Amino acid sequence: MVLPNVYNLGFHTGQALRSLLNKHEIPTCPQPNEILQAMSDLPFVYKDWWLHLLFNDPIHLIIETTLLVTIIYIVFSQSREWKGQKTEKLSENEKQDLLREWKENGRQPLVPKTATTPIVGAGGGKNSSIVVEELNGRHMKVSIDGGKTKSVLNFATHDFLGMSSASTSGSASSSSSSAALVDEDDKQDKKQTSSSSTTSSTSSSTKTSPDASPTAVPPGNALKDASKAAMSKYGCGSCGPRGFYGTIDVHLQLEESIAKFTGTDQAILYSDGASAVSSTIAAFAKRGDLLVVDEGVYEPLVTGVTLSRANVKWFRHNDMEDLRRVLERIRTTDEKLGRKPNDQRRFIVCEGLYKNLGSIVPLADVVALKNEFHYRLILDESFSFGTLGPTGKGVIEMYGKRHMYDAEIVTISLENSLGGIGGVTVGNEEVVDHQRLSGAGYCFSASSPPFTASAAIAALDQMEHRPKLLATLNENKDYLYDRLKSEMAGSNIIPDKLMIASDERSPIVLLELSEVEEDDAAHEEEVKLLDKIVQDCLEGGVAMVSTGRHVTGKHMHAVPVPAIRMTVSAVHTKADIDKAVSVVKKAGKKHLPK
Image (cartoon, rainbow, N blue to C red; front, side, top):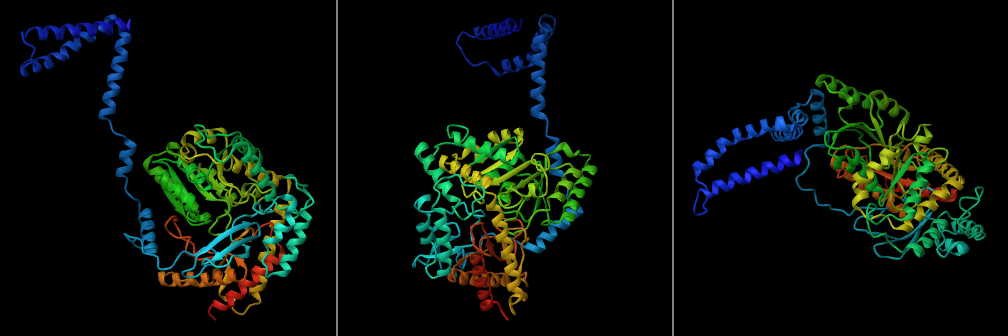
């Protein structure tokens, strides 16, 4: 019925054009008066055609009229939501917050200042460059200013479970290779490492007994063997994004293993730990949505918040009273505007273990507030996974909460406790499937090489079947805090000048100056002072980090005060910890003012 009427309309239109052109002996363009006459007659022609269809083909008429009305609505209508956002005025509380931020941060320079001193990594001083030549568990080889390579204790990286600790020539020859990494000047340390390595030579298998000592066989041996096998089978790279031709079976196996370990429906693997975090936030929060974010979150989370273009409200770090104040203010604004909470997607964003602060989120209070005000929770467990909880599942396990219910979206980096490359997001089926089309890092970045996924699977297996790794990490962490507190209490200088700023449940230990000035000049002096302390520690055979120059305001909302960061791992010995505390105390006495 519809097609014959369309055909008739076209046929009669063609006849009308033909009759119009036949009026002219020589084909010429119609005259202006003829065009005007045709345009004036068009409404009447359409009216007659419309009435004809009304009686002969009403279905065709309904479809055409609906399309016409829709086109007119799209052309002449305007989004009320966008218009309301454009004209919405700031409340008095929001104005006060902006003024407070202005007073605290001041005017940002149009052009960033040129750095007068180089960025300090693990303790280099002015005009010094540090190159890490080799990294193996509790030791690293570094060269300063291109000089002789030196082996130092590694308290600088986040290899919490020692997954990078492996023999350099295979599992069967652990003894000689492990001893080779020991500082030649540290005889006692060499003997302990040699003894530990001799025990490891009794087994060359990637599987280890649950009762084995965590340092008897280096955890990284299993990762090395898995990586070699994957290289032999798959080659080096995957050569494409996951959604095209970059998905290998080991990627799917890793996703399944992580989901099973965390007790979630599914997991999605990204090729980079930072992009996993930032892409996940940007995949769920868009322009017009709302993010309520802890101002202490680290750089990838801030990047994701920025990329989302959502409305952002910040609350003071781990301050649950301030979080409640922010949520209540948003509720009051909703009531004034007549807006329902489900009119926009709303998330609270936190870290489990804060990288730059060494603090732990009060998850029980956050979950209670999120349920009370009807928000979803995005929780980053990159540094708490493998370090907190009875089996290392992070703060969710430590607080007795549940994935997918108490924390809807959880991101995990594979680059810390698992000693690998990449990151994952775990959650229910909808959370994961949505990212396979909306996660920028998943859709547009090449997938991780198969051997890195195989290494992560092996690391997860080590974490599950060697519970003593986590137990030893906790023992070393407690011992480090006890030694720091006892040494500081016995010093005549450090108690008044240097203090522990991190949570004592955290393996990331931060030491800050007791008296911190707010002005830029004093801040620079504090950074230089901590740089000197860390440089002396490096010269004393222990690598740690001075955070003042690389934890800056360029990618963070609130910049933490300068600090010395020490990271303890499961493969450290008590002698290692004693030496680290000793060199910190010695350098502090040397440089801290009396």
